[in-house]
Length: 61
Image 1 (cartoon, rainbow, N blue to C red):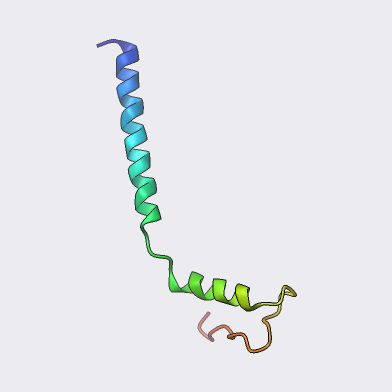
Image 2: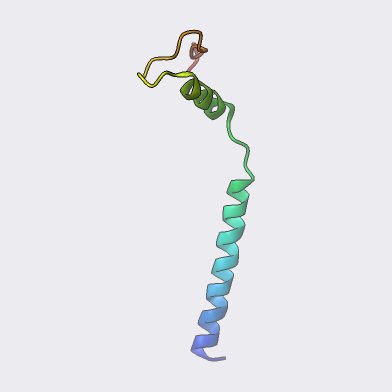
């Protein structure tokens, strides 16, 4: 087996493993804490303060 052929096979294996790892991360659930943070950001008025009537953060955060 030539050096180039071995290197090509190794590169292909690395590519497959990286794609598999990336796909696993894409399929992970988004934690509830991030959903809550996104909701608070959507409800803010841009001043850094929650908009009136926006949900306040929970005490355990």
